[in-house]
Image (cartoon, rainbow, N blue to C red; front, side, top):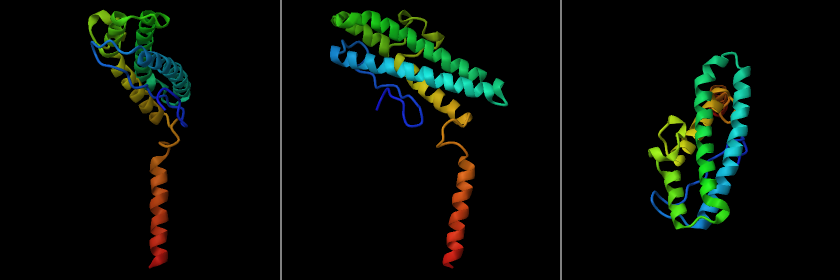
Length: 168
């Protein structure tokens, strides 16, 4: 389910409604803002866990640039979400405000805040955040599905070889 934490504690950004320049329907915006707020909170918790694990790693310094990028992206999303929430004005956003919200979601132009200096749309920033968190989790072996893949493959191969030798 978008915007929730999965069984392995990984947040996934919700799909964005509408498209650039479109006054997005209010119901779609409300659902998106709620899901994006959950995703942002879940991602922050995930980044905090990743940061704690990186600090405990033998090669902690090797994670600094990726963690900085991940936090910069998170901050960019947070700033854009705050602007969206202000425009939303507790549901009182008219067509003009909802069109501006679509520019904040889909646009990368200069009138959209600093965006962390990344020049990304909100949708792109969320996707990049998802990818960065996955990559860091894999590097730190926080993802149980990714941990010791080589060892698990060797064990499976050995089991297959035992089965072959038993059937011959």
